[in-house]
Image (spheres, rainbow, N blue to C red):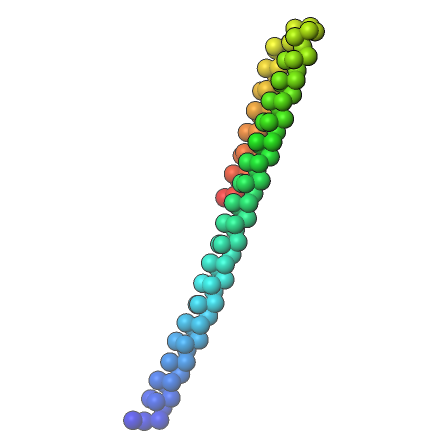
Amino acid sequence: MSNPLLQAFFVGRAVAEVINERFEVALTDALSELGKFDAEAREQLRQFTEEVTQRANRAAEAANAGQATTSSQDPVDLQANIDELRAEIALLRNELQRYRSSSV
């Protein structure tokens, strides 16, 4: 065997080892970032769900309290309630679209 041929073999082997190590590091980093993104997305979804549930509960309590107090007062303005509900639905749609666009 000639010395340059042996030298080329060891250089090729070293190149392969370095490429393999760098690929492992890059893959590990990418998987780590993906895991972090997934955890953050799940946490944001949990917080969003919790906030929606709390608001819905508050609205239900307010509606129940409003029904109890309005029965002895003037009748409820149905059109005003419908307009308020439509506005809330529009806000929820907007928040949902914003959440979806930030998740993608």
